[in-house]
Amino acid sequence: MEKLLLRNVDKENSHTIDVYLSGGGYRAFKKALKEMTPDDVVEEVKISGLRGRGGAGFPTGMKWEFAAADVKEPKFFVCNADEGEPCTFKDRVIIEKDPHALIEGMLIGAYATGCRYGYIYIRGEYPIGRKILERAIAEAYERGFLGENILGTDFSFDLYVHSGAGAYICGEETALIESLEGKRGEPRIKPPFPVNAGYLWKPTVVNNVETLANVPLIIERGGKWYSQIGSPDCPGPKLFPVSGKVKRPGVYELPMGTPLEEIIFEHAGGIVKDRKLKAVFPGGASSSVLTSEEINVPMDFPSLAKAGTMLGSGAIMVLDETDCIVKATLRLTEFFRHESCGKCTPCREGTDWLVRILRRIEEGKGSEDDLDVILSISETMENSFCGLGMAAHNPAASTVRKFKDEYLLHVKLGRCPFRSV
Ligand code: L3W
Ligand code: SF4
Figure 1 (cartoon, protein in one colour):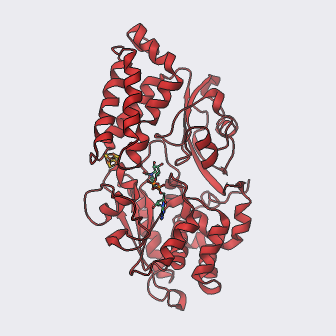
Figure 2 (cartoon, helix red, strand yellow):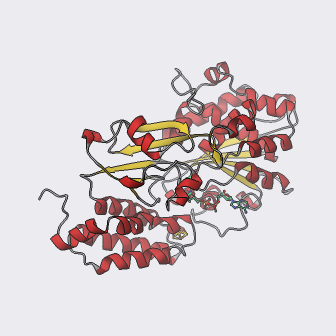
Figure 3 (cartoon, protein in one colour):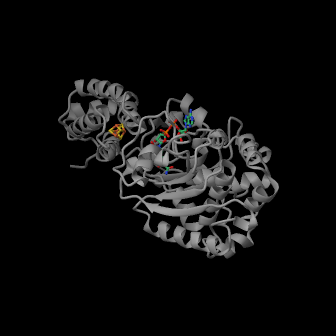
């Protein structure tokens, strides 16, 4: 497949505006600004079928339509660059290697929705990305793509970078907005959705980095062209970060809907030392596990939901036959316990109890009853306040269901069967 999202990343100095312009950069923004009305841009994005790449897959054109229809001012356009999910490192490639694609996507989105100010909220652990973005923004101002009366029109847009401080929950859009306002990053109740009441309770579009990097392509080549790539219900190119026990870990750009098996065994080279594949978390740390018999599944939002898991960020985490499923689940759940913001009881207490129980099973001190307790806690966590708690139990609940024998072996042996001593 022709490289679309990663078309620029292998060029020398791909992060600079000169290299971006020489490859046709900012042409889509100029087209939108000079030849299209804001409504035309929204319509083109709706035709494309683009769905958010941050985890939930909400239709981008619809989100922009809601924001455009809101008359409160000023409106804000926020890029969610708080890429904190374990094993998710796809947005980083765009931020560091093609920052102008992101800025161009924001400019087109801001024009379409009538936003006057923009923020890129980048995770604190990406200091290099922050510097690259700041430099790219300065270049865009110098060339007249940002600021007042851009390219001689009445469209004005100022863009700033805001760095997070290490909290995963700030990737949840309303916690991100709280943090941007200078408050502790805790989620707000939805609705109202940010498109109507976001930053400073004004209309605010929040889009993920990868989502925005798709936008110049859609405007330049057309929504219809884009809608024919990948899965019909969920089109476009997709970045898949693949990690764990594969021969060639990395970020792969493939059409949405590429089978998981093909990504692991063809693109990522198969399992290290040609061992057997044991399990895959197909959509980041909060997705439910798939067994080796379940990997012939298209990697898109509806197909993975049908398979009882989720696409999430598209991060594929591969475990082989030498990995302990209990230990892997414990590690993932420890992450969520650490990152739970503590606002609501099911998540704050649930993640803590899951860690305690998983740890005792992993240490060989668990009982068979613990498995039912894990499932019962998981059920309660479904009632958490935000997506973090609603999904944090997925690794535990799904591995208990699908790898029950391995859990029971820990109980029976009184130790982890994968430890050499
Ligand atoms: C207007 C409506 N807007 C929904 C918007 C909503 C949001 C998007 C998705 O994320 C996953 C989970 C986490 N009118 C709307 C509407 N929206 N209905 O659509 O909304 P929702 O509520 O389905 O999901 P969510 O809670 O935003 C859940 C993952 O996303 N997640 C994402 C992190 C992303 C980053 C990143 O991009 N760097 O960190 C965090 O919770 O895992 O899978 O925009 O406003 N009727
Ligand atoms: Fe905070 Fe977890 Fe509750 Fe979300 S689910 S509000 S992260 S405690």
